[in-house]
Amino acid sequence: MRGRWAQGLEPRYFCWIVRDRLAASERPGGFARNHRKVRRQEELIWLGSHGFTHILSLLDSPHNLYAYDTAGLAYEHIPLGRRDEMADRLAKVYGAISDWLEDPSERVLVHHEEFGDRLIGTLAGFLLYAGLVQEGPHAIGVLERQTGRQLGATGREIVAVTLEERIVRDR
Image (cartoon, rainbow, N blue to C red; front, top):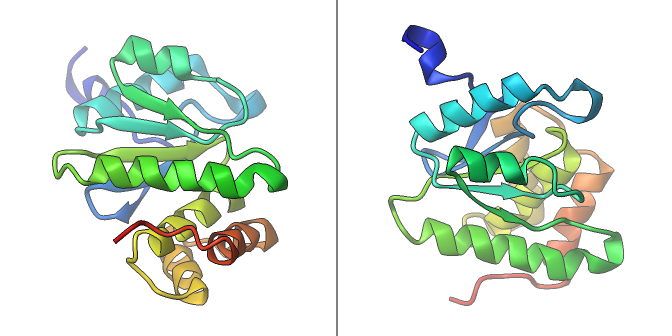
């Protein structure tokens, strides 16, 4: 392949959370019935050519993991699970992202099925975990501005769990 197509396609709803280090998008290839294998391949090419070193899947299912292996992209799969499992899972998600970002050469993409509340709420929680912001409303506001989406009840609940359970990085 040559030209524009050789560089792949930017994942849908791609945005930076921490400039040039941590990004978010919809699941590569699209979600549910809209998922397209060719689009997934193009998006994985784009991620590889733009220096992404890890993909973190928050999906409840193992969808796409084989494709990440095939594309040579390192990944971690940590499903968010149910409300009663969330504090444990969020601690693992935040810890994995934090560990990767300690290396300045790392570029991480986090995705869920859709680019929605569960993903955005999790990333707002990460900002709190990492100490990049100090208060829940500030984390929510930052993510709403960066993503251009208003955070609903599900995303706000994730931020609340992060605060209530005091899920913070050891400093």
